[in-house]
Length: 194
Image (cartoon, rainbow, N blue to C red; front, side, top):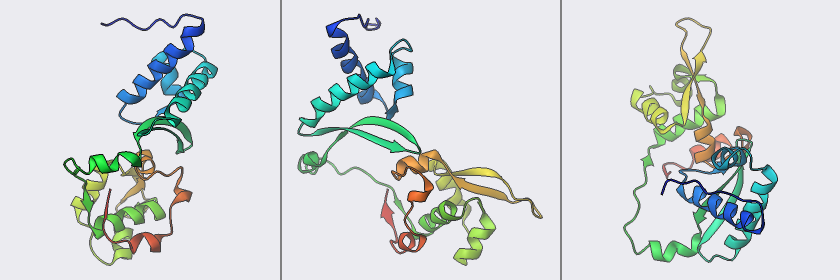
């Protein structure tokens, strides 16, 4: 069935729009902003109609025992997504444990230095850490989408400058870099699941 939902004016339009947004949130890989929803639903749908449909969904999910409609601001953009809440934990515990990546202290320290001192060169990271940075650490952080090259330093050899990405902010639930904890607190945590 390849037919688009026709959102006719009238009482059923709001319910149909809410159902469509719900399906889009379920099918999306990440949170959706109003601009994403408007593009997906159709630019003729007003922001006010999208907000009304999201409010209707919020009311519906406020009463749901296991699913929350999360509204959050990340990197200055307001977005929504559907998430299973903590009430589902006992049931998930009975299934196979999800595989999480475990990052070494060296990876986390390198990421922390990039986040707090960006833009920063590999040599500057090595100077602070007191050891050479394994190229695999940088590769891991780039592949994860947490850091990227932001240019080259105006110094001999023109070393690459590293900085964090929007993916870093999203994965760590940060609105901006100002929301980072202090560097010392982060480094003392050791390894952690992400």
